[in-house]
Amino acid sequence: MLWSLIKIVLFVVVIAAITFGAGQIIDTGGSVNIQFGDQEISISPMQAVLAIVLFIAALWVTEFLVGLAISIFKFFNGDETAITRYFGRNKEKRGFDALTDGMVAMAAGEGRTAIKQIATAERYLDKPELTNLISAQAAELNGDTDRAMKYYKQLLDNDRTRFVGVHGIMKQKLADGDTDTALKLAEKAFALRPNHGATLQTLFDLQTEKSEWQGAQKTIEAKVRTNNLPKDVGKRREAVVALADARQMLDAGDIEAGKDAALNANKLSPALVPAAVLASEMHMLNNNNRAATAVLKKAWGANPHPDLAAALAEVEPNETPTARLKRFAVLTKQHPENSETKLLKAELALADEDFPAARRAARELAQSEPTTRSLTIMAAIEKGEGASEQVVRGWLNKALDAPRGPQWVCGNCSNIHAAWTPRCENCAGFDTLEWKVPPTSADLQSSTAMLGFTAGMLTGEAEKQPDTDVPDAEIITPDESAQPH
Image (cartoon, rainbow, N blue to C red; front, side, top):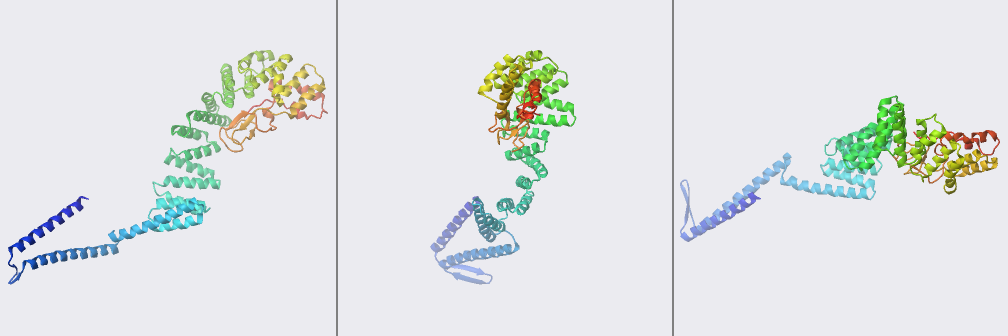
């Protein structure tokens, strides 16, 4: 900009000087003498002015021809010139036009056309970081995975596109079912771009699938740190991961580490039923029954569950029914209107052979919310009070056709599980199991059985009636309590 201004000013000054000089020559009149050695030429003032103009024009033409010759030489020598810039702009325009057509074809789902246009763009544009990426996506759209893989590998050579290359190859490995390699690539992608939400989710899914719980714990922390996961959800998932890690370490014989992980899981989420159950077991290993009772009580306050009652029974397995009824007040005083609390009261009363109290606790549920468990309890009550065989069998027959009641159900796919697990066995969703009534009934005995201390109430009935048309398994099955792991 400054140089252009200087040239304009110089041009004006030169023209003004020439005009002034020509005017002076014309005003003086006479002739102009030009001497070359021994020769002298005399010309008029007008001729002198014309000669000066012609001389300047000749200089300009000479400069132009010399510049043109130099440009031609540089062009053939491979240097950048105005000519190469002109052809380059034309070539770049054609390349971007082809690239645009390719992207439009991709958006329209025309894979073959997209590949053809991107190939044209590759010839005209010297931008591999752009054309390789679009080429890989076009190849994926056309189902040409080998071609896509080739382009993704080329993207690894550029620092600006390395993440995209790693991410693309990772997706290819996932599609091929090579989850081991995909996990390593996900870890590499996370190292390159730790804030990328999709990469974090893929990494977490692969880690939980491979039961790499300690790595999953770090991934959850990264998701919370980068605002890809709310803090409360992250805390709950940390608890689930810690619980799964605790089980894994306990199964491997690492008791101390497993104990620490179990207690940490319960600390992170006191309402998580399986975490409370496992934490109570760990406290009992330390002969700390009071702490075991405390964690079960707190979990029951948040979510009454039969597993918590079964775990509390294990704290004092040899106590009398009367002592157990008194000790279980820490649970039965909470949520007195909850169905699980009423069923627990009924079973405790059954074990203590207080049949009227058991009836008061279970009768309303048997009418308003009939389930296999509540109706089986009513059968046990009738048997305990000396009712006829017909009456007892009538309750049992109702129990066979009744809903199973709450079970571990996946909130994503509604698949029913016999025991709690960190991942759904059907859809692989993480932390999706909920304790609720399933949309359809399923024959999962572990979620409908009576507690262990009342399970034998109907055994005598089965032994006396071996020829009954009710299968023995359906009558005697409540001999094991639900113990989700």
